[in-house]
Image 1 (tube, rainbow, N blue to C red):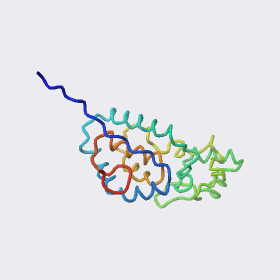
Image 2: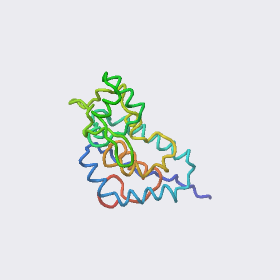
Image 3: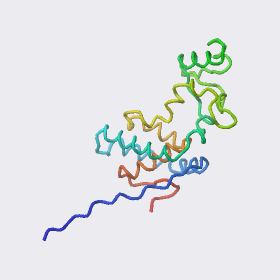
Image 4: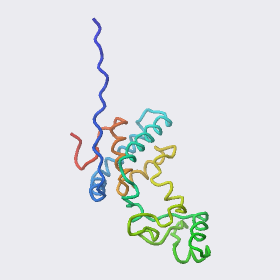
Length: 193
């Protein structure tokens, strides 16, 4: 009588963590393991890019549906926001000032010539955590946290960096460790049991 193979059980996904201070602590503690996961993605994951990107998109959609991005706004509080000429044009028009005035009042140029908004938290972040210029926000804000873009594995170093800042990135990253078969620290400080 032939033996029936049981289907492999996927380990349970880690619970979502929403508290930014806890996420920051876990991310700092897990940083070496997160780098190993990135290396696993780049060198040992035997999966077509399109399939990986699909799993990332599905996982992102699942996590995003459970975390209120606008209520968090930690990226607006902590990150330097890159702006390009189109962003400056839109924002200057919205504020009824010239592009030159906008650059003088709101921008700084970094040594690598990247132009960023010079205020942290973002000058356009209202007291209620909402963006005052949401309809005209910079492209970097619209696209953040860059999870849905193709070629996830090639961009994975930025995901490691963004784990500390963004609850959505942190939780997607932790769930991907499970879904993609990585054996390491998942979702908390200390080794996986």
